[in-house]
Length: 61
Image (cartoon, rainbow, N blue to C red):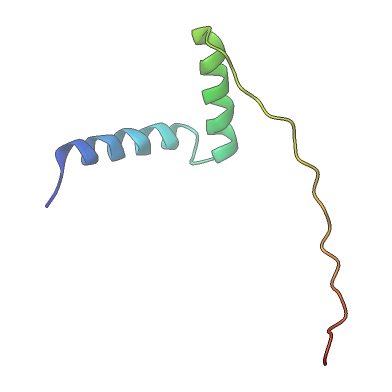
């Protein structure tokens, strides 16, 4: 069964993404600038530090 509302949303999403050649970074930049233009709060979080995973020696009983 095809839901016309779902199809409409998918079409709009595809058209929007196509404007940016499906570049996720460019889409995010556009969405952030749109948030700023609207005057609402723009939420950002500090970057998390990346911890290296150090392999340990196997332990056998």
